[in-house]
Image 1 (cartoon, rainbow over the protein chains, first blue to last red):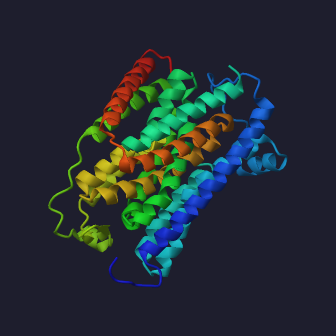
Image 2 (tube, chains in turn orange, yellow):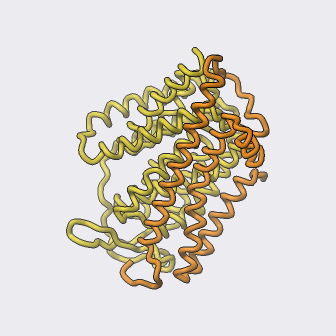
Image 3 (cartoon, rainbow over the protein chains, first blue to last red):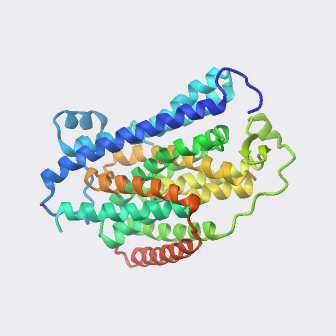
Length: 129
Length: 278
């Protein structure tokens, strides 16, 4: 962008967002790793079976259940919370962009970004058509 | 095989998949799913869940590096994400309806097509001088840094690009892959966006698209922590290594070898799908 319409240019916005994403991924990976070590200590010697699809238990499908499991230091819950945090990083990017475009007073893109955010929230909230 | 051995093997496989995926630009997901299903006998639904998570990790992990170079165009990306996220939702819903054997067959076909797309030499789009009225109104035109200074570009073919992005999103949601090859095709061929811009913008869109279907899959119980853990950690590390090598290494031979591997995996996916084994 050659003209600066506001204190926030697209490049500055992108830089902040890029760092935000990196931090999100690092924290998520660390949580998954810690949960993974606990998981292997607990379940390491039994043999895994992914041949038949059963679906995850209901506590590992919802945010509330995952948080409860994490606080009870259940390894699978900790990994799942890390994965949820990872899924949240692109969502955070979209949220941040809403503010970025609002600061630039670019309302077309505020609306565009809100539509994308709406789809993401719908999906994360359970997604029923 | 106990869980420790299984986890280590999956981690090593995912590391290789992430490395090759980023080296060739195909992404880790396209190798992870055949690896998990064909080699380790994992149900394709668990494989899709784990792959989606790794796709997000790769996209968000690489974003910081891409952003620094100043190529990606957030407006193009955000606008097209309307198409990809709606597509991703549609894909995730189709996945619940059709049999897993059909998913395996579609996966194989998409895999071959993606390998074909990424093996073709990319030509920098021509005739990029006249502005397009829709792109102008959406303020999509931009510029990117080159050794000769800032190079400006115009964006074209937005309706066609938008439609193709919807398909890319649907495939991503249905198969648990990033569909980077289709995204780049839409931006290169139809929208005539310069490579560097289309590659980095595509990476940025992949994460958001995958997040849209990951929510649905999480709620449906497809994302298993024990399986997704080594896949995510492996692909993330592998793809970060891949992006560092990308700059220097001669990748032509690797690309050819990888393409052959992809086609073999794809045929096996289709065969197993048709014979009802996946």
